[in-house]
Length: 174
Length: 452
Image (cartoon, rainbow over all chains, first blue to last red; front, top):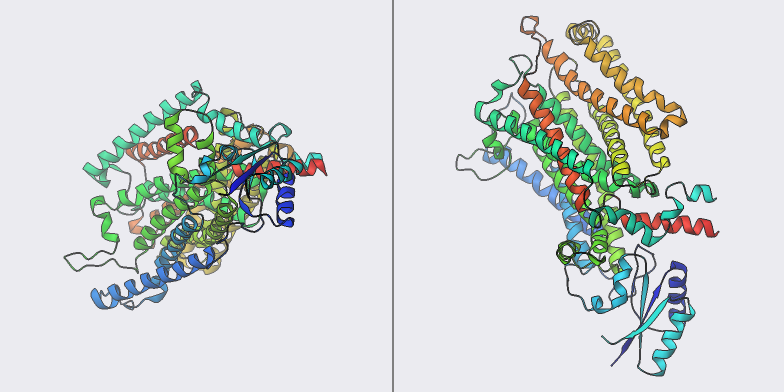
């Protein structure tokens, strides 16, 4: 059964140093948490796979706008052809207004869904919440969790974290 | 270097925990101040008055208002344009500053976005009221009615419907995505279990992992990129309500951009006013710095210059057209019954912000509040005068008629001001008015700058 060596850092520079050391020594990073975005690649195994959130938004926006334009055309030309001062039934310049708005809303809504899926959100009871140190990751601590084997390997992992400047280290068994 | 680093955040707040405390303490740890209760009571009373006037208008109809056979668009449409203008600014400010990576947005974007939500909600009341038969407002939505009638997408009324609905919903999404990490902060702080659960549910299980931050950044930035053209399109559509008509003074291609700048102008004035109030009431002096007000005052000054140019362009094109109705309108503007209002509007919108050429005035709270109030009043006059001058003096002189608002018009206007203030007051007690995680980033940069 694997164990997690968890280190809390007060400074981002120490946190980045610990991460760099872990990567240099080939240690598996279980997760890292921070009170603001710190950049860098995602450490989770399936991170970065699939199309980007912006692409999802763009596709949804184009689809929403296109479908709404079709609806406008169908209602004005087929379902309810109404002579408004002799203007063309298919008044495309006037029909562009609403699809622009609908397209933006569709893109935003799709972006939110993609954010929830990509961020694995709406999981109110995630195992990570069992790590006590994590509570302060939403306030003032940078937290790094390294996978290690119990015993000597765990001690090495803890020493790595402490050596990089962790203010608190502990072993957690998930 | 240190002066630059402290520009957006006082050294006492350049600590991650201190940022959290500064923003969260007024929410959870302290009870509301007496001034908050006073403001709450006043806005509640105004809201009740507005609700009564709206209810009365539903029962009796638009005959209660000052609208007449010539000036068919009175207070309701002017209020609508004014409120939606204010509502445009919050999301525009937030998204523009996010795209351009302006760190100082951290202190103002959250309450500016909230301002958008509440102002657009107020704006949405007026077109429904003005329909005359408000119970049928849903006819503007395309649904398969048994009568086989569908909305006319060639109508500006339908454009307005989609502009307001889409913009309001999009702004809610944009606001919420930005709020999620801060909701997690509130969830994890010591406090009453009930509140922690409330914030916990809203935080959706946010942990602040690298994966989540990456998704959050991508989504937030993508939404900001969409928000900028969306905001411009929404107020352009409001401008097209006028420009797509055939009335003297309205059929001008400058209207959409002129309306967008006007929206930014009045919205920034409201942001300055709210920022000054929150700074004082919630002791946010360490995160809402004079530099923020200086930057906002510069925007107000620039917008005032553009507004002045827009007014001059309107006069010039009216005169240059040679069209008798346009010339008559121009003559009525400067020598007619509404001229004093027009001059007051010019003084508020173009002259008063000139005070900000003096750097000291840009950080003087009294000057900032005074000019912002003047701009908000001036912009309301502007919205009103666009209607009054054109509709009172249209093509046919025998149809000319002046406009006089009624008490109910004022009750509804001040009622919506009360509702807006009420929503802002409740928001300021429930949610962080300053973006905590973004302010932490500012704190981090300031610390790095100090260390360098």
